[in-house]
Image 1 (cartoon, rainbow, N blue to C red):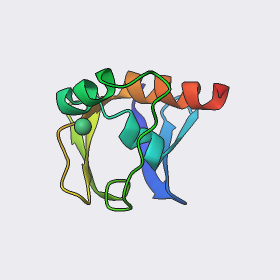
Image 2 (cartoon, rainbow, N blue to C red; image 1 turned 180 degrees about the vertical axis):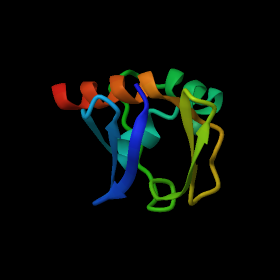
Image 3 (spheres, rainbow, N blue to C red; image 1 turned 90 degrees about the horizontal axis):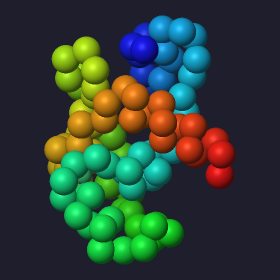
Length: 100
Ligand SMILES: [Zn+2]
């Protein structure tokens, strides 16, 4: 799948895919699932139920960039930008969120 349109609205990332499905992911959840090595290591230190408290800078998006044809990177307002969110990963975490 590829994104046709990505918008940030009401503190949520909304992605319309080329099969017309839509993924909606709250930004705090998205930041909590940052796939970069640093954030992964941070999560390892805590239990799976750990949910970090973020500042508003950390859950505000400054810029979204495409990476090749498979992923996006998000630059957060606190300057963190090393996470590469693959499309499959975004679909997976949005489904996880719906199931909660
Ligand atoms: Zn990260």
